[in-house]
Length: 135
Ligand code: R13
Image (cartoon, rainbow, N blue to C red; front, side, top):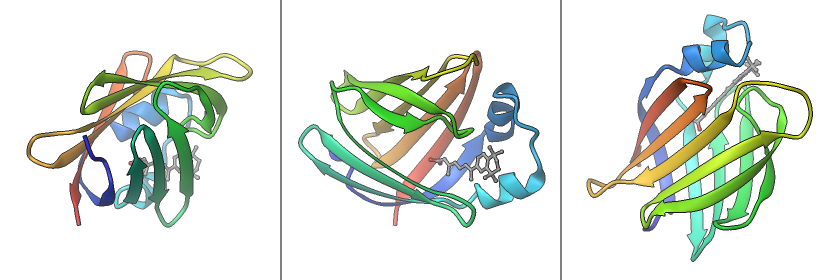
């Protein structure tokens, strides 16, 4: 699948609940600022580079599917991530905190037949789902 492109978020479910599950006090400022992220993905074969921009925080990760890499959980804690192909259009990534304890976190990113990008982020049993469309 080809994840490359500029993406705009269309819908988001459970983001607030996700931050709460991670123990972050949720203030509405976080929600509104995280609510209109712009995502730019470049993909070359198995290697992806993902830049997510909001007015409060911009993150950039680069990784190769099948190889572990370091990133931060959504609440900003350093973790080791292990991305793998769940299907040929879906990447599934488990995260392990580099130190300390916390709920088990993971994300998935999938490009659908309709050309949408679906991001899920989970913390324990709580799953946040965000749907993006190409700009
Ligand atoms: C700020 C305060 C501290 C905490 C926090 C958590 C998340 C975010 C910002 C903050 C943001 C997250 C954006 C996520 C996106 C995901 C995606 C509460 C820890 C710094 C305000 C902005 C955009 O869709 O890929």
